[in-house]
Length: 321
Image 1 (cartoon, rainbow, N blue to C red):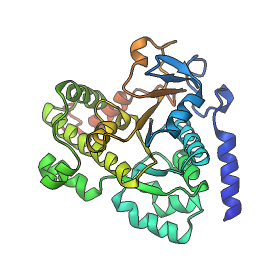
Image 2 (cartoon, helix red, strand yellow; image 1 turned 120 degrees about the vertical axis):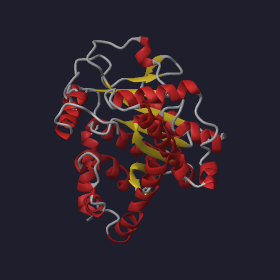
Image 3 (tube, helix red, strand yellow; image 1 turned 180 degrees about the horizontal axis):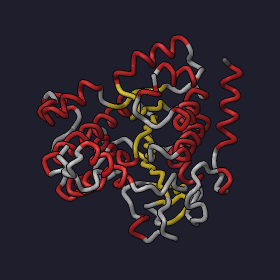
């Protein structure tokens, strides 16, 4: 088992992109000058990775926001985790991809195969989890396991999500709503921004009532992810989709409401677009750092979405969801 772990760590070290195109797993946009670069939104400048690493080491909580299906995002997340574990107090690592339903599986893995990353994937039944394939996420878990870091679930349980889908915020007990600091509601500008993102994510096909419900669910998920960080203690890292790392309306907001003294660093791994270079609006996003990577693909998700809807509704009509 120890040999397996050592070989896995060596593979992780060899796989970390250095900025040279040959080391990236994603292959689109490799000629973009931003690939591999890190933008500091406060300094309004590109900086060396040591600047990001220093800020991460001095933060209480670090949120590493990903595009779920980009393998380079996960390898770079592993790089940051390895650095933090080596240079400072070893952090706990909380995962959006794991819910409280997974805690018994995690406990069983810790009791039987705590150094075996493949055993963890098997124990979690990752192949049926609904997340992208295990090989994409393996580097992140391996980075934590190789440094004996505690892995924590961060997402809501299936029962909690079902209650929210059925009743909205009314499905959340008042005491829990207060504990998670869900009040006051988001300011209108942030709520409108979130609605726009949901509408775009559903290719303009979600009706207003569905969008309102999804906003409530997203807010509770963000608050629950913030709760996971607070429960994990200082320092901790959160692995989550980039939308959850937004400072204006997502996890950092709910951490600030409950623990304003805590320093949160929000990092978004960003695929370069098809345009040759980013304009200033692309750079001034609600994160502390943007780390640019190649793209996985140029597929139009709305084309696939439209085809799936046509299968469900062969007459051509669509229904709200």
